[in-house]
Figure 1 (cartoon, rainbow, N blue to C red):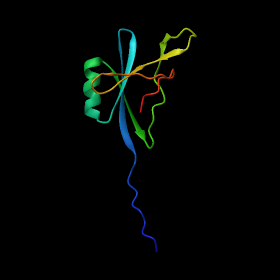
Figure 2: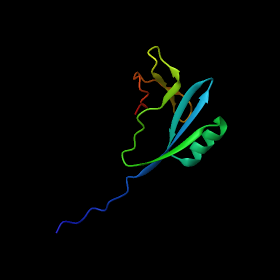
Figure 3: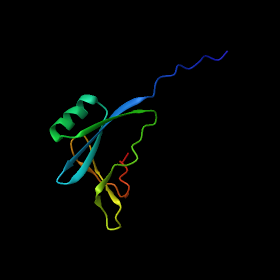
Figure 4: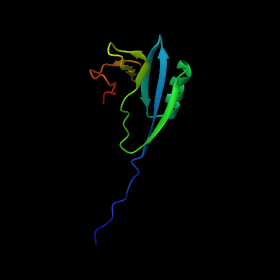
Length: 96
């Protein structure tokens, strides 16, 4: 008889923080609720709690700002200390 493997939960919760500064949207993903709430409180930001397996945020688009073709522009991703992550993709995918 084969021993059964214990299934550990791979469900995780992450916190998407979205804010605007000088008419430009920014986004950051936090692993800890308190860090997300702290970042949001000093920026008057939105906090979105996201959970599940194989969690991935596909894009954050700004429907107010448009490119030359009229398409919405991606928000700029920030890490925990605020450096900009430069992505060459138009859809605003968060760099991995």
